[in-house]
Length: 430
Image (cartoon, rainbow, N blue to C red; front, side):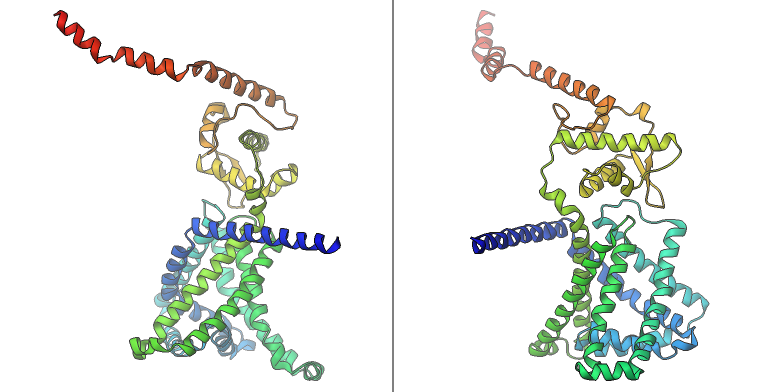
């Protein structure tokens, strides 16, 4: 009995996992993940040298981090790029060294190029999270400046701490007992990747992202990233036919292919983070009546906040309405954004952008992708719910009366009014 129950539970979980994966890849396809990865690959070609130059400049500005940029470069190309990237590493290193001798105008151009790449990444992530408005003004500048400045400094601090720990006798003795410090340091790429991807998935989208969801996505992407690197290296080692075609330039297309694969993994990880929040809504059946009721409740909250001179965040809505699904809440707000009923502040909150005295129920129903419901099936106690329910029932009753004509009578009336024999008889009389 217990074995049968355990087997059924496993089958149920496998089936649910399969449904989740189908939902994940369907969202990835609908959001044009492959096209976005190609666009980001193209942008990376122009921004990789500026990003390296800015990172080196930030690390060189602190005396304690002198030489750390070389360790960082070796870590990236040894652990995050397949072995075929050695030639590209030399090229990029030469380009970055030459870029350090640029004038102020040239340095400004490099910073703008790196900024534009981060802007493109944010646009791709906002598209995944259905965010129409990107960051603007001070919030956008602070985020990008944090990535360009604090990112290299945090990595440099991580290397400094790692070097310090490795030099400690206690750490050295303990590492020898469990297999040497080299085995422990092999975990650093996965740890760094997990932290970096978690930060990207939580901070880059212009909407609130749950930290635990971002961590799950960051960890999964870090593991897939490592597996993809090993697989790509294995392919390059055992199928060297590309060298016969490209010759000395073989490293360039391989590097481009790896950058494209990397962006595919990163964007798929972003889809995973969002799918963790929205998958329940994809599998939960919600009627059209419930959709309209939830939208009206959200508009009521926004209207009350506007009367008090404030705004409403998505977290406020979910906290106030515990039965509201997070995925559906995000969809409702996006529909209202598309219809210019609400707008989004730089802080990520929502407020009304229309005067509700000039916005009626018919206009709201036209904005929604669902058909007009016959009634409201929602159990909240609101004085206006009964009014809306009565209006919907009256509309449904009126439609039923107007359309209560059988098709035979309809076709018979049409055939009598367009009878060709009747027309010929009239001509003979003339």
